[in-house]
Length: 195
Image (cartoon, rainbow, N blue to C red; front, side, top):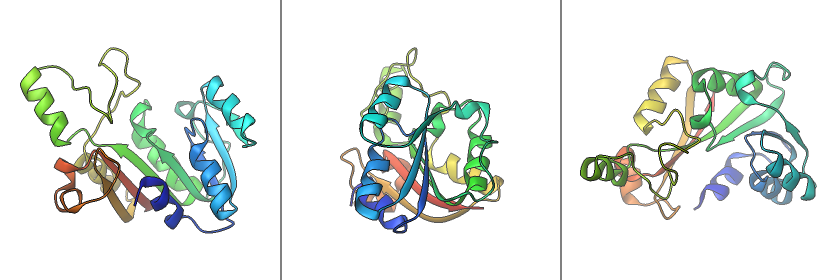
């Protein structure tokens, strides 16, 4: 099962969705088509916003780092933050906001503890460039990389419940190794969480 299918299984039909850092709107479009969701995307990049609008998606230009006070508590059934938390200045604050705004939330992170990242750093002595972390250190948008263990500790510190979690390989699928030792073998982790 890939990440989109997992999200589809975690989201209820006809629900209200907020996607923070929605990019070109792939997740919103998919959920709208498959589950008839009512969706809103938050994005900062104008070209991504234009793509969302061309796809008929509702999107608002907003900088997540400047806060999400314009959303009431539990104003959405599900808040999605996929591959976004690591680019934010204050990931802990964003995580608390996500769980305040959504009855449930889905957060996807790249795992900096993946074996290829560890070996790359060990052998080259340089910040790794991998399929899940494709940018060089000086031009990466990622400013707060973490491992699966780091993210789970942050959830615990914030009093956030991890309802379900899934782990994916570089190929984007789940397997025995990603399930058995996710902090080493998963390149991406996906969490369903709530406060």
